Image (cartoon, rainbow, N blue to C red):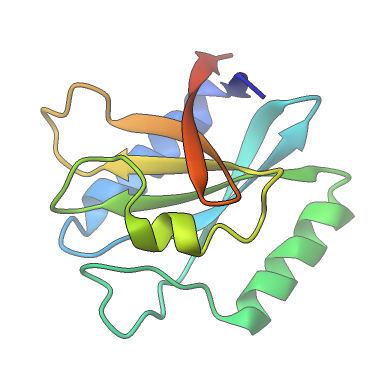
Length: 135
């Protein structure tokens, strides 16, 4: 996995979501087909400290996963924002990368960020940055 496709409207949607509450991490799932993300599924961040972490409640995660399958899509990515830091994986992001086949998108809520959307493959404690192809 060296690159991933991302629909332009989904890129705009998730950036707007991150910027709508820039003091807290936003989060959600990304789905599509054939390596191209076509739809975002925003989720509520239920982490104890949402300014520095994200967590999707299990009940909501299961509901969204059923919705993805019901739409004949596949989980291709998970996204969250970093309100106060660089949008590279933090040690916590690497530790909690439970879906090795998914791309992890990290958003910067800052309007002047040079790369506001970055994607990574995180496996076995290591990450590599993926190329995002806007489709």
